[in-house]
Length: 456
Image (cartoon, one colour):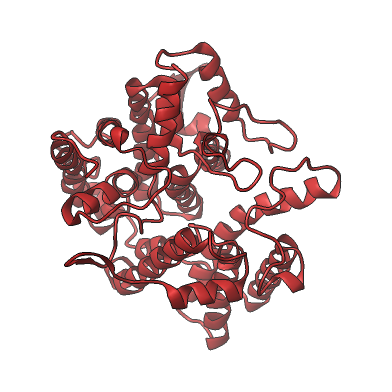
């Protein structure tokens, strides 16, 4: 169909980093599979290998107007190299894990959950609902909006429009915070029924805006719920986490495939759920999840961006592109400090400019700027993930958990959005950690009148 003789070899090669990472992190116990090193590899595989894998095995047509079949092999190669670089940077090739027997004996069994009062839960719930109503345009547009998806996003924003845009941007970190608080409230040891109800209501409210807009991230708060449940409850939380992941995957798939047929609205999303086809078919082949049903898929936009790179003859590393990429990593709001384009926007390439925006995955931007050598930057990412995995294993407190959660959030974000969106949570994690733990005490030891660098 779209595959060459190399495809099966590249698909098999993509499984190797997951196997290596799985074997190594298993030495750290159950939480090893929740480590950033393992999850980052797993997310890359889901984003770049899962859809080609299903398409290859089932021979079901891969429905995506962004897909350029000629570049699927290049995408498989680049993503496999990136996963291998995380393996190298994350220290997963070492025969021994950083977890010693002494560390295992001295380490707290589980992260301690702090108590959250119902009063604060009510405040968070009210803020979520109010922000949702404001962002969707008012009460009249909640059930079935009077505007189309993406309408107005290309218009010049002035005055109050800028303010409302900033509110929409802030809704994403707020939903992450809300999902985290909701999970902690549900998992409290001694809790009232009202606390349980409020926790689940907050979790739902954190998802409302993405559901309303038919976003592929409609179930994103549920992924945070699943991650924290496993992090805190370990094996006892597997059932809850599994249910949450399947619901998140389903909601994202509905948003991805029905956004073209409905205007935004909660009622419209419910109608889309009723019409959703759970089985993808071709002749006698039936699969529960087809290659086009993956809400985490980043291969299709990656191939389209790569085609644009070839057409624009940007095959050599350009200082201008590197400077643009580095400029976009600054954390200031784009309304204050505008971002710079890296090649042609996919919305412009696909002719949707002025109607709806198509985001470029982080790895597509890396490949556009650096080509295949861009995968080497994932060695640094693997090193950073190793640092936070170590800190959390040795001292699972609130600060290290927040840092771990921020890094976790960056993984699926990078499959949907560019380097700017992916690296922002990572930057916040670094800042929070070094403010709380005072980096000069963590990274350096004081000897006399000077600091000496030590291994972390």
